[in-house]
Image (cartoon, rainbow, N blue to C red):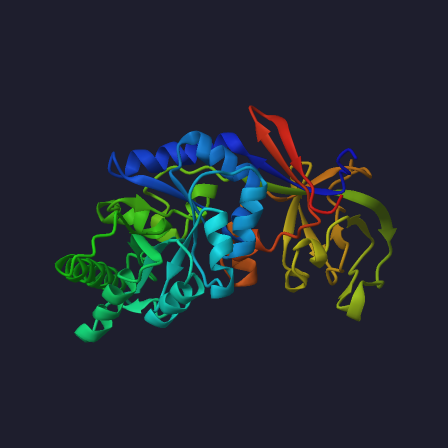
Amino acid sequence: MKLLKRTWASVDLDALTHNYRAITAHIPRNCKFLGVMKADAYGHGAVPVSHALVELGAAYLAVSNLEEAVQLRRGGIRAPILILGYTPPLYAENMIYLDLTQEIHSLEYARELNDALGGTNFILNTHLKLDTGMTRIGFTAYGPEAALEEMVEAANLPHLHVEGAFMHFCVADSRDPADEAFTRLQYRRFTQALDYLASRGVRPEIRHCCNSGATLLYPEYAMDMVRPGVMTYGVYPSEDTRDVLELKPMLSLCTTVSQIRQIPAGVDVSYGRTYTTPSDRKLAVLSIGYADGLLRSLSGRAQFLLRGKLIPVVGRICMDMCMVDVTDVPDVQVGDEVTIIGEERPCDILARQLGTISYEVLCGISKRIPRISLQNGKPTEILQYIV
């Protein structure tokens, strides 16, 4: 089936190339690049983006869970893949068959994985996850020596190989002095824990801690590998990081005008009658709604781009459609392309209107939206999840 041009996302692989080269030029020369593919590559399409990153030279990929790893393997990705979240020990052998690397966040979990492989000759590749202040999953990397000894014990289990060790910063994208101090504290806790492990004979080959914020503001913390997430896709993790590198957004989201109507003054529009036309208005119905990822909470707040002009959403956004005021666009026609996210309307704008972050906007784009990969301005692949 050919692409149905109702609503679609375009993914610019040339922008990915630009961002990859900018990031790798910013970090130490021999530092590895890990491409973060979780959440369907932040809504961009995990399989085509993974192929492109591996071709560019990415040494590692990362996903959130086993299902995402399976998706990449089925898509022909052969690069090393790190699972950043919990996988039930029941699937330990599956991870070995798929040549996956699993994070280990506690001694109890390490023992469960080791026991699941008991009676076999299998050894699961792992990375120790250290908690240095994020207070999410991870071995406590600060405090009593007994907590550090748990990592040593996990590393010595017979069915586990500790290839790496990593942590996650929580405010590395902030230049607030208190946040900078906490970032330095997290890094110090990480290096001190690594020193302790080394004193006990545990020396992970790959040490990594830099997310997007740290990669931008603290490249000296890169160690053996960086894990830039949203910045790989051309989105800055915070306002404090915008002046470091020039990044190019990869994704644009467009929809089409499906109907144009002349509506007289005093007419209610959409569910709940939250909007009433103040005068005679020309309204257009767009083929996008909250089931596509255009959140209902943007009702009456968002503006989109049509023929070079901003058009406001009026009334409540519906599941599959929304209404916009096109009175000031006299030449509008059915079938016209409307930009929801694009070069002139970056996803940061929608994020601010929602009181959230760009990550959530990108990850929320529905799977019924096809992703069109572009290279040199031409389509190379159409990723359609439904048909």
